[in-house]
Image (cartoon, rainbow, N blue to C red; front, side, top):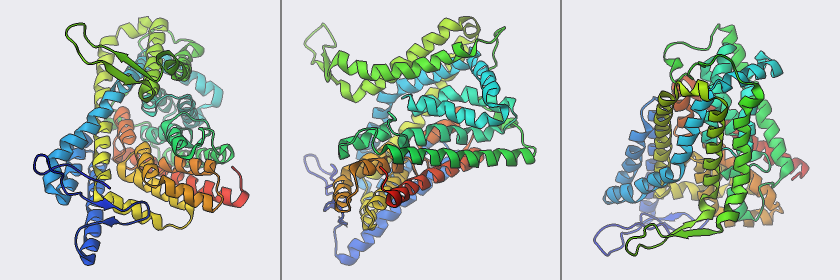
Length: 507
């Protein structure tokens, strides 16, 4: 049952909605006709808040400003007395909690990306890539770089900061429209290596393990088939877009499209491509190793006393909850130090100004994403969200039911991990029972759940999408079309994998 606190001190506020359990409909006060009207109104409120935020994001307005407006507007229409408590106790709590955990990752990722620019490493890697794969395969090169980093365990947000300098340089040299960069990075970082390819360490592939008793390598054949489908169809789409732009005479871009351009290299000669690649390799390897070493070093939890004056309570840190984040931070520090060690001279001349710009970019990107996180938490606490969740239970096929439920909830919250967590927590037992009744292995359930979370999550209000556009200096209007096309391909891949399973029995 969903309960909220409010009203007079010491009294429990009436529940916004009562939930009778998986597969049941929310129980709202009133007679049968009143309940139906209440369900419809609750659903409309959630959809209106979602539509409003998507429209303002698409039109270029600040999500930092309008995410709380959309969330609190939905609360106001549901229960006006809860606006202030939910703003402080839920929206701000989740927003600040996100920043507490992830702002250092955004900051270090932005600094790392900026140093990759000013060191000339991006230009060196681009030059080597052109020689290796050919100028006409610039998009494929960027997709593969994103894929290697993501599969190596580098955070999706860090990949955006780290790869953008390479992408901008490569697209400029080959006169490919800059507006295609976000779609290209999205294909490499937000799709098959995020949740489809077996063994990926991204959180979307880890969450289902706790619910289904599986491992990150669940359903390796289906995951590989899905990954090939996404890569092949996605690259076909992007190359078609490039050819259309070439026929129309569209170049890299002019005017407002050239915001947030990487800084030019000021050194006298480029580093060797292997030296330029070294920081990226060290970030991936360090992240992999630190993820395993940190829990061994600190144990399940670590306790310390914050002061030697007085008798303060000890601080207890649950290491398991932050080990992956600490690992990414440590890996990025190693990457930054490596760049400084091998390219101090070209970096030093613009270090102060460059890092200042990186900090500004990190603050904007992290605040955008944190606001989205707070919005998703508020929407998930409203009656209309449970109306959607329970209505999805009517889909008869267990795999299709799970796929649709998770991708819809991920779309509403604007978060793959958020929608996945909510869906599995609320409906996981039902998914398992239905799968067992149909003889479907838990590994298949895991892979479908993981892939579905990364389907419709990338709607215009998604934090990663907003971060990607902010880092590249582009807008929804100029570049979201391609991101949405990749989103549709990714969503279709889930049902393609389901079809392959039923046709072949592969796992």
